[in-house]
Length: 194
Image (cartoon, rainbow, N blue to C red; front, side, top):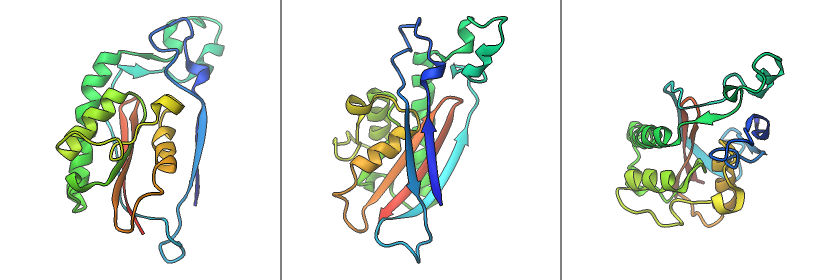
């Protein structure tokens, strides 16, 4: 199965809002998932989980094509809007608890993760989530940050981080791919190097 994840965010950015216009970049990622019998090397998927908890604190109200309707075309709610501090305070515990809960459900000690490839939205969010999941301050090798090179590429950021920072992993090493964002929606994929 070829999974392609395009994140085309420029269209919904409000370039008149200095608090949010810089946040996103456009990118696409792809991953191939195949049966374990057919795979040569790579990674085993140990478990996946999705969660959504509705929130109005980050949204784009039906997408940027909604602006094609002449009445209200320039209303700010037709583009990306967020209450950043509220998002931060609500998403960090939601994602941290989800990761820990999912790890325990599939019999993984979250403190034993070799690497986390988290959604690349905010370095402070990633550091706090890493600290909560590992039970201590994570190293840069454990909690990969690519924001300085790629900025926020929405849910594709975790796959970019995975692609760029996995070659040094040894057979049996455990990792976590996790994206989260608007809505709020989050997804976890626990993987093990084959």
